[in-house]
Image (tube, rainbow, N blue to C red):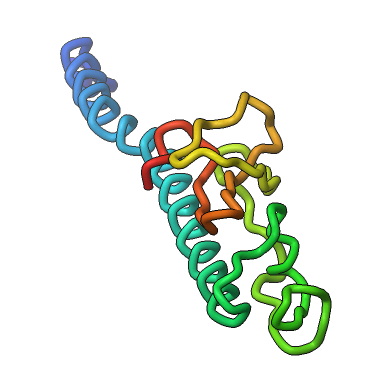
Length: 142
């Protein structure tokens, strides 16, 4: 009598079915991780920028930074001109995690609409109101 080695077709099919079930439950979890990370990063960066705008306004008699938010990156005096009294509040404007752009686009709308699909879009800023939004559709109400 010979001793059989190897697997039968039924055993192989059972293993393939088990692997398919595992893949069907695990793969969708990993595909959502990237989107969740971008959302979290965007909201954290938005919160940091809004806090720095408020800090700037507190030290500059309630006046918000200029339309490009360049005042946040330099030392300023109480009038907002280059000086030595306050700041800098940020080393650089953080990137929008959805587009990797950090361009600040001036807007007068409240709430604004997302900019076109330009890859360098980052933030929408209303300098009159001192309000800031993430330039990404679906995140303009946050």
